[in-house]
Amino acid sequence: MVQIKIPKVSVIIPTYNEEDNVYKCIETMLNQNYSNFELIVVDDGSTDKTVEIVKSFKKVKLLKQNHKGPGIARNLGTKHSKGEILIFVDADMKFPKNYIKNSIKKILDGKVWGTIHYMEKIANNDNFWARCWGPVIPLDKEGKGLIYRTITKKKFLEYGMFDPEEGYADDQSIMKKSGIKAEPSNAWCYHNNPDSAKEVFLQSRWIGNSYSLFLLDVPLINLLFLIISYPLMYLLMLKKSLKIIIREKSVKYLFYSLLFGLVAYHGRYAGMLGRVFGGKKVK
Image 1 (tube, one colour):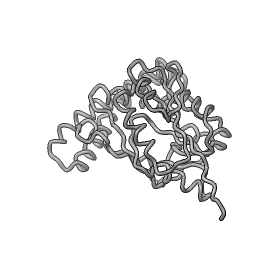
Image 2 (image 1 turned 30 degrees about the vertical axis):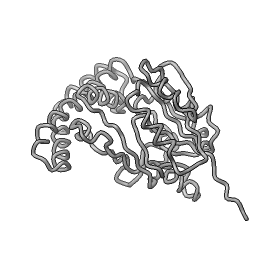
Image 3 (image 1 turned 90 degrees about the vertical axis):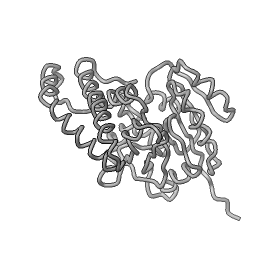
């Protein structure tokens, strides 16, 4: 009987103060119906009980670094990995049993060298902030993604791993270097969305800080650009609010969506202002 080789997969998860999420993340990943994989958690200088929780799982390889950002953490995990295929996920995600199988199928079929899951469903669905953030479909109009969640280790190393200087968008750096967008897989996961005004603002600020909007390295010109474009933020906010109301099919989200929009878009604007005066935040 011919034995079919099952390639080893390395799942790499960066963590930073994820004590509320990391247990379920690891538990659901260890419960996969694909057997030949290792799970590597790289703690990025957590000050809560994240490391203690990770250590309670004997099957997890734990690496630690000072707080340098998720891009550097993912690269460190890669350097210590043994798999032929890498999967990069976040500590605030939970996974169905077939996540790994579905993520790597197109790679095993020889069709592509990297994929992205097609959907992130809302894990904390009972929270209106999380519901307003919404389910994430990380695909563009062409049905492809800017992020590689799953990639062969050979290609990942060939393109120089993630660029931590990209800040929030460090996981888009493989696409930028290769010029090739990720193909969608049949994999999906649950994601714990920001669930308070503070979390929505902070996450939005980090996103805004990574926008590539500035053509000149002249702070005054960039600041004028932001001031002139400020009214546009309210049009975008109203557009987002309308989408939320239509998706939720509830009159009460007329208020919730506007509140969410005010916090989220001012967070992004604050991030762009921070970039003008302080550069990209890599962590």
